[in-house]
Length: 602
Image (cartoon, rainbow, N blue to C red; front, top):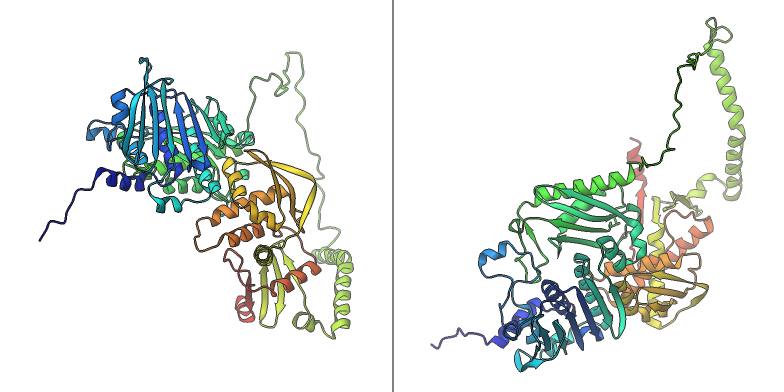
């Protein structure tokens, strides 16, 4: 029987490794930017064409490489970061596996130009599908410049499964943000199709956060700073009133390396307990410093999943740190001890007299029971009570009599007539034969609007209301790309946009019937709901957009509804195809039966 075990060729092995490390254009951006940081670059420039499908170019002014190092860098497991297995427990650099460049070169056409500071000439290397096509001296600035062209050109199946340009660019921006937040001392810039998306000068962390997410976030940050023998925690958390309903401004870093850590996220959420509603997610930019020997960053190829030696203790420290910061923000007053006129305290001189102690004059002979007996006092109280409430009782009986005149008896008002009550600006209550029907008015309106918007998208019908005074809203650039991604559907539903730059959107029109809603709030809720739906592969694009629009346009909680509005909502809801559930699958209607009510009185 012939042997069946074979060694894979390097080109095939590199493509397999690329499948783990290089999942999309954003993966290339991450690996090359991290290499530039590790090389000591102080000015790092990222140029993207067609969301990385055509070109990813990253240049830095770091140390550069020699001719030999430049060639060796594209071999598998070639790295300057570690030399022994023990080095894995003292890692402070971004990369160390030595797989990134080999994986990128296996699935793209790569050009490298690099020069060391002490060298007069640099080195140029061209590699296509792991095959070296050119290596020669060249003239280039100090540092390294990588150009990655035609990603996945030799794996058509992988290229076919890339998402739209807007989606891929959104992923690139997310990776870019993680790296630039961890290194505020480095200047970064990002260009997409010759348009500047970011230009971030070197500065402190607060300035970098404001540069990435907009100047308005500067007023929303609370400082966190805790030092222990186990871990040091620094950074910022967001004020409770600025929490949102989706992820997007939640960042953990360990030794300046971004990490995903759901367990630590729960610690932050626990600290905000009873401060935020259940669906709200606070912002945080938390940087941890720990002994590299106490963490393991080598459990996943992307190096974003980190294992800690004592996670439980760090969880407690993190929660206490966030709570302390929130307590300082909410409770501790800020006193300006440098202000000389804080409190005017009079100073007594030796000649001034001490004033007499205040006294309360009372009648020691007064007897409260002399004039009236207890029975007389109670009788007087009931007389006053009757006088003050007679008018209200008369109004109540008058309304009941009017109801009997209309229906023949008050009983029929609740059983045969339609009577609606609104409770706490949230629930509509309607008596029915079997008991009481309760309707969540916001979810009911979401269901109504969802079916309306879905019909508009499926049949290309829409009505837009132009805004007399268009409003402009600053957004995270990744959110701008979400809007561009679903702009066709939003235009069909009545929204109209203009983009003055890569960080803001001007709303020039909105769906008819939403004139009483703040368009900026609508866009924020729409983006939040749409991002929450992205993880659901069973829902189509039109359904996701319609559901997000319904959530943004629905009647909010807290608004009082008239009888006519409740009746119209009731009728329209039960004309829907699926009135029992909201677009998110939450119940809209529940009935409290008479038996359930009777049990409460036993």
